[in-house]
Every structure is written in C-alpha cells, then in structure tokens.
Image 1: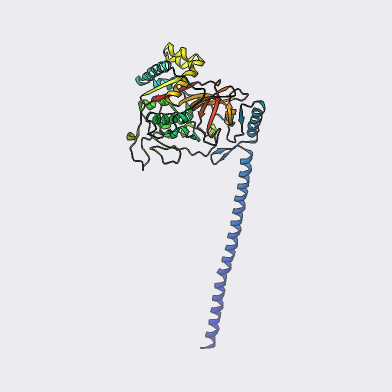
Image 2: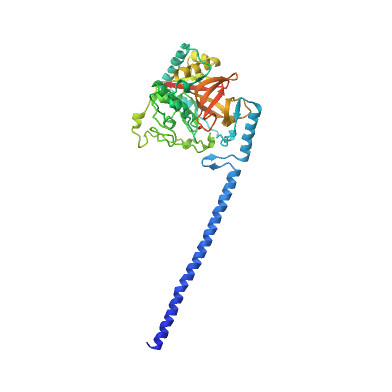
Length: 412
C-alpha cells in the first residue's frame, strides 16, 4: 500500500475515534443532568409531604375520610369529657377524635309542610288509621311487664337483633335504625326462620318523602314506604349480602362528622340488584301490612288533626312509656328519635343523661330494643348506628327521663 494511502487511513481512523468518543461524553453529561433533576424532584416531594403533614396536624382536614380535630376542637372536646367525668358518675365519657361541634353542622331546612303533603295520600291516611287501631290494641294488653327487658334475649334466634350498623359518611341514622327494626320484625314474625337484612341503601335512596343524607323528618316515613312500596334486602358496606348492600365506606369516624353529610351525596335510586344476586329487584321486595306511630310529635298530631284519644295518650308521659314497653315486649324493637348534645358523641358506658352544659347538635334516630334499671335509675336500651367501636359495643343505655320525640314501627 502506498505511504500516502496509509497516512490517509490513519487520519480517518483517528477522526473516527474522535467522533465515537464525543457522543459518549454527551451521554455522560445527560446522565448527570438527569440525576440532578431526579434529586431535585425527590427533595421537592419530601418538602411538600412535610408541609402537608404540618398542615394536617394544625388544621382540621381529611385523612382517609376522617376530619381531624384542630387544636381548639380537641381542647373543646377534651375539656368537655373531663368535666363530665368529674361532675357525675352515672356514665363515663371518653374523648372521641371524630366528634363534631355545633359549628360543624351546616344549617339546612327540611320543608315540614311539603314533606308531610307528599305523604298525605290515601295510604298515608291509612297509616294514621293503623296508628289508631294499633294503639287501641296496645291499650287492651294487660300483661305484667318486667323491670328489665332485652329483645335480644326474648328472640335469641334473630341475628339482626345483635347487629350494629355503621351509617358512615351519611346522615342516614333514620334509614339504618328503621331497616334494622324491619329486619328484626321479619325474623320475629317468622319465628326465626327468615334471617335477612333489609337494605339501608334502598330505603335511603328510593323513598322520596323520607329524606336522605341530611336526615329525615318523621320516624313513620320509612315504615309508610315499607308498606306502600316495599324494600329489598341488602347488607353492610362491601358485604355482598342481599340485593343492594350499603355504599358508604366506614372510614370517617364513629360517628362521622356532619361535614361529611351532603345532600348531593345521596345516591340516586336504582331499582336493580347487584349483578350476581339470584333475584330481580321486584322479586326481592318485601312489604309490611301496617305502619304506625308508637309515639309522635305533639305538634304533628295537632296539625294532622289526629283523634283526640291519641293526643290525650301522648300528652301523658308515663302512659307513653308504658305503651312503648308494651310495643317492644309484644312486637319487637321500634325506631325512636330524639335530639342529642355534643357530649353524646363521647359516650363510653353507663346510663347516659342529656342533663348537660353542651350544645344540642342534631336530631338522631336509633333502634330501641329494651329497658332496665340500675341503682334506682330507669333506662332505655338502644342500638346505635355508629359502629361497634362506639359506646357499649355499639349499644347505649339512656335515662328514661330523656325525651323521645318520635317513635314508629310496622308489622308484616
């Protein structure tokens, strides 16, 4: 090979080596830049996480659905708990991190007249007649009632008697307690053969005159719906039980703050069962034969111009207690509603009394399933709908002196 050709080849090789090395240096530079950017992003995320943690600890905020207490809220509730435990010994309070204050309850109005008018059709008038007929029947019962009674012991085969529901992030206490009463009474009527759960979801979403996640007005409304239209079966959240299980996850406390309750969150009525259920919605419907008040708001009775007999009975508090006892003893648990105070949320055990220095926070409905006496104090036994971690494994005993504003039930 000529010398000139050799030198030209070497120059090309040297030039080629230079070209090959240059991209390598650029890749190294890009790699270093990428590493720096990644570190910067990581540090930024760490900073944001720390800032968020600091904010959550110092402000009320959402944590897995739970609205945490601010420093002021915690102090307000803890001071309340300490004062309750120091000033009386009938019941014990325990700080509840999900307890709400009156300021947390968003003001809203339920149009009493409008909701009542939606019920005043022919069947609703029949419900008033059911009330008259049934209360006259109760007046005719002359059994000696025991000092202590627990429906769970009278009907031990009924599993629903012991079940504690969790209404979660919806003001559906009225639906949960009514559905629980219905489940119990279906079991009682069948002598323990029908162990089903009435769907809270179906009652909540498909009863237009009952209410929604912002509450209800009259305890009789769900039972009128039970009689007129029927309700399907359905278990708790994620239970895969029945036609329509409950759709609200229990992840926001016991109880959830009213700030979770939003009328827009009430699901739309769907008359379909879950896809793998063996029945259609229509096939699964169960209906009651009667819907009636056991105790009703006095103003409601006057406005509805119900019979003087009923008004007279319900104006006598002691007679009202007697009728409630007869109803539970002979026919099973009932739904009872009342107003509750902020301190109610901190109940741990004992005989609760609403004699208090705290604010009324909202109306609340529960299942009333018995009564008793301890240290000379008479009490009602309730099943609440705030989960088993609250109160006496989900139950509460309340002084009989506390006023029940509204109580209803139905018969199969």
